[in-house]
Amino acid sequence: MSTPSVPVDDDQTLALTQAVAALMQQFKLTPGLLAGSAYADLHANDAGLLSLLHETGPMTVRGLAQSLSAPDSTISSALDRLELRQLVSRRRHDHDRRIMVVDLTSEGRALTDRIAQAHLDNSRGMLARLSPADRVDLIRLVSTIATTSRE
Image 1 (cartoon, rainbow, N blue to C red):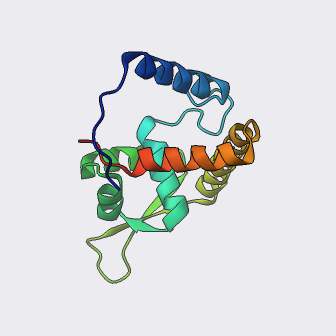
Image 2: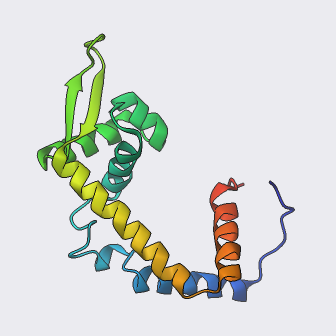
């Protein structure tokens, strides 16, 4: 769904920037506020990689790189960090020893479960402040923004 490009008012741009910043602070979504949260001590790339493995199950390194639109070297660095923390494991593919398969460890699954629950709790807290009709509108608008490609 594409809508014609309409110039955006500077006041609206500033208002949205301030609202998003306040939202991130209110729900502790900024890196500086993560101490004690499920995200504590995670590198920026690590959370996305862990979440993807949580959703999909075991994946190849190449599959992770493609899904995250990241170079193999970035994925390998993240996997090194996560493996050191015992959050993921790597093993050779059963039928093709050249391929590495990555999976969450039990510690990694426990962390991603906590992260997923934190997302749900934050979303529930945000929606609780709105009327049922406003909730539908917010979800529709955020979904539109999230799925519309940047040009």
